[in-house]
Length: 188
Image (tube, rainbow, N blue to C red):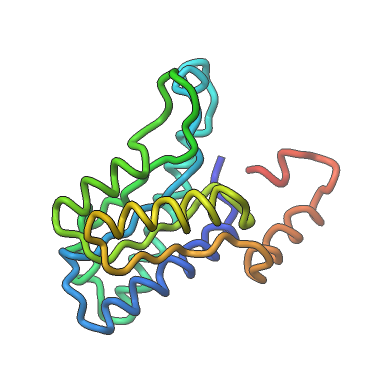
């Protein structure tokens, strides 16, 4: 299934704003990083055929391509290419619970890795949450921020969840208006 276009556009706008600001300021891209973060799932779900991982990767790829195009349009394509990961988006997962194997890398481990490699500005963009809640407001804004700062990250920024973003809501409304009684109309 292809990601919903308005969903992708809204997430890309959120992530792009933070990166454009850093690029405009002349920040060293080797000290900046963008991590897309999604809710984790047990790996056993994926092995049994759950499409979540492939759908999440497709969404992140589509979002990152829009971010790349937007930065290219403002003359910052070379800057983006020098970020850790370069043209390949970094995806990490959060909210693992229990002893079973979950999707990774885990967001705190990825933050540790990037900080250890010299990252001093970190932008985290949630891609699997359509509204703010405890996993964005507490796990990312408080817990991850605290850990990142302890590791030497001087600027921690989190792209907003979509909430009432007009692009996202207009896209969702248009999809639902097309066939409101078919669940797959809102999901493909």
